[in-house]
Image (cartoon, rainbow, N blue to C red):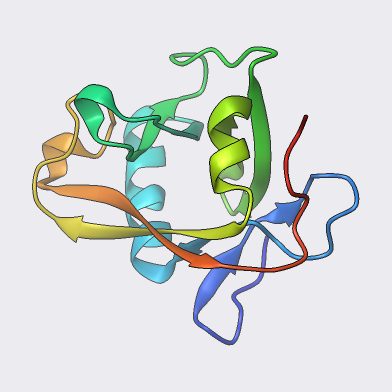
Length: 139
């Protein structure tokens, strides 16, 4: 299982070549909700939405319900007790977010109807911070 940091977040494993720091983390509240959702839906994954209807939110799907492709980039993998959970983003969007660390948190409210947490009365959201030393872009 991935380990919690001193900030109380669970860091994903580093998967981008040349990087030395995790790009994405989960808060304890996000981990707790993911345990519950995993029991209901089976293996899960995240894809960072690019906007439009869902307002650039991290979308959580059962594995296989959202198909990633060559246009997507795996930013990190969380090792949860239930199994591995990948966090994806489009490569185009990554070029804009390449200087940030993303933390997935949970807040009360309605999120997108497409993400599995929607019926729970909560939504995942991204908290970001600037970080130096990440790969600048994929171009």
